[in-house]
Image (tube, rainbow, N blue to C red; front, side):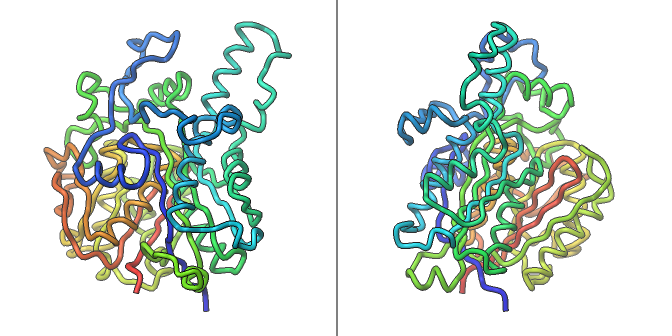
Length: 417
């Protein structure tokens, strides 16, 4: 019989708060973390179609990390370190009392070290001094830099993996953490999702893709509006989320506080298009069904869905269609919320932040509001969505996450009993 897997610690760095307490208070109050981008250094911002983002403002790495460590890692890895440290502390996980080879690290990241990457390549071409490239350039920009740094910071010597499946990266990281414990490779897994890609090149790339909201440059807080008729693209965000997963036996042995159980997971590929999901929603629906099968639950048991809900015209409609295919007449009785309405789309961090929200919602019986859901689009109207916070008894929650490259992920959480 597979080991049961539980969540014992959480950590977050987000546009609405650094630290779980600050983040959750802001989320329940429905605060927006979307603001105008103030500067891209020498780039005139008015040349960008979109000029708003979910930024982690006033983040001072020296406040959380020693100066040497902060200097050696990219902004996304700084976020990962801060979130993972909070989660480890929150879980009461004492690494000096653990077998280090039984603690794994799995990180989800979509872009990696883009802040340093863009800075160094710009300086190289401007100055033409290759011998002055930062000596830590290569180990800092690689996608697995955060997982390596997190493992070293905490002394975790078990499997060390990086999952990069665009916007579904850290939902897959949660799922792979579940599998890692179920198959006996680890007793505990530090799962992290992190991205910090609000940079001139990445932002320009998303603008060229015409994926970002452009209508609300003068009203940033209104720009991210999942499932609303006025949505016109997603809002870039940045941040990190971290969860400590443990086998139930391990958590009980050390008398850990348990937020929720990670009960099931599914990963599929639509094998359809690099950017656009299948419009009939069939593949998303299949992913949700597979995750529920893996968790041993039925559609009738799902109480809450944390939707992927990026605020794109096609993405939201496809997700709503898939939800209705799976849950049929029960759809309108399920509570649904879209975290991206407050923090924007944090790319590789989106799944882990949503996972933390699912755990907090199950534990507290509170569901944060979805901002800007003012004029429900008939193509994706969902009765369980609301601009007000909700109080619900949640026994089973579903997390949806979909990424470029036809990647789909779904994770099922249960109230621990």
